[in-house]
Length: 115
Image (cartoon, rainbow, N blue to C red):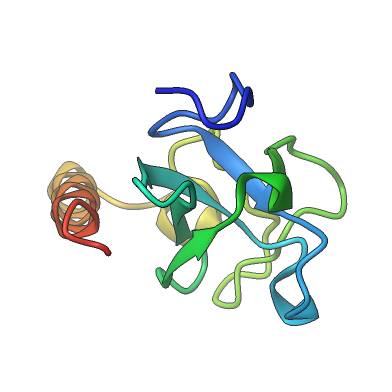
């Protein structure tokens, strides 16, 4: 689904928040969960797991850069394009990876009810 001609904004796209009045959120990264009927985009933030409804004009495509958001647990830069996205889970076993994927799926299901 397209939003206001922003063809790159689609479910599961990685985004960075920008130019928000709530400046603390600028530069935070996340995943598009839904395109809402009111035109806002439901985003799940990477570090905190918070859900936010953001105007499309306040989103830019995620690009892994040196100034990317930092994981508060391991201090690694977060790369949403990688699995795992930081070093926290680099030594995890298969069961832990499955648990992580299960959590992602659970969060995605909860996001569908985000309004």
